[in-house]
Length: 108
Image (cartoon, rainbow, N blue to C red; front, side, top):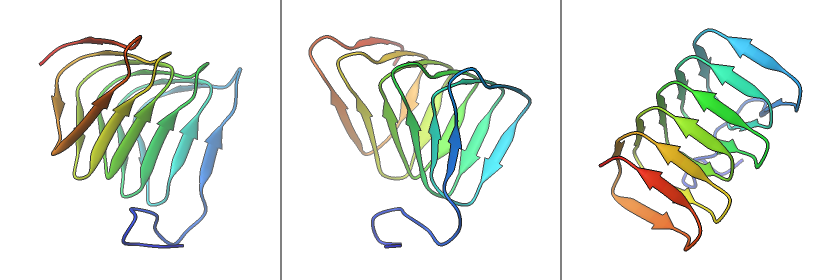
């Protein structure tokens, strides 16, 4: 995979709908979340929160794409994209931010 686009070598992870993870998570590759994660997430890759996904904790990653719900602070080295169905409740630190018109963002 291309490392310069924040994709790193290793297996990508999918947390499927109906799956609940209680506890912190650390990944070296990209992760798609369609279930629920109750805990902090740290990743060297991209975190994608699908439309049915929910994260109740802080996220530190290369890039983050939110189509579901994130309740926590988000820190990225690349960009954060909050699409129309996305909801982010928390503070963000990024050099690039895109928020679609119908998205919800409460924080600073």
